[in-house]
Length: 241
Image (cartoon, rainbow, N blue to C red; front, side):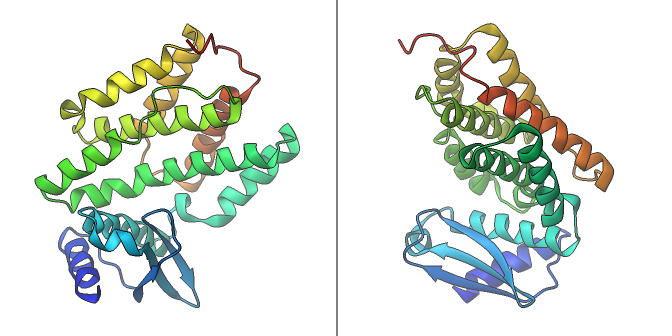
């Protein structure tokens, strides 16, 4: 494990993104997702599931989490917890959001963060690794709404994120099935909701990694408003045929 982490840190440095902090790798056998990064007492921990150790995606996962750590070190606007907390408080007060809606916005924020960090992670990957990532994102795309407004908004934003991720890096040519699934998903909605999807996908595809704090906060406000619009009633959802 330590050798794999050293390899990933070296790959980051060679690509021009050195991580200066102490980083440790921890395995959590109860973890359902592949992994995540957290900071405690000045040490950055990359926590991964035990099944991720055998995954072909392990290297890509470590590069992704190290990119999060890199942006945390640089105090990028996207990785300042106070920015998210401020906006979330304002949204909760203004919109009277439920816990489920707050979680949906938190998930959407994670997609925005990931668009930014993956510019680094993808730049550190080989062609073979990029193909694995493209396949990974293809499997993220849902093809049918559930009928629950909040869940379906979350699924639609996730679809937009997966497609935007590959389009942003010119990797979308080999994932035809991904587009077929998303077309099926959007077929349940009217044109207005399809336009909303295109706006969110376009927003994510074109996020800037060099936004100032002010620009980032304005963009976040716009993004959250778009996501909240998707959760309003179920305007646009036709029959689940």
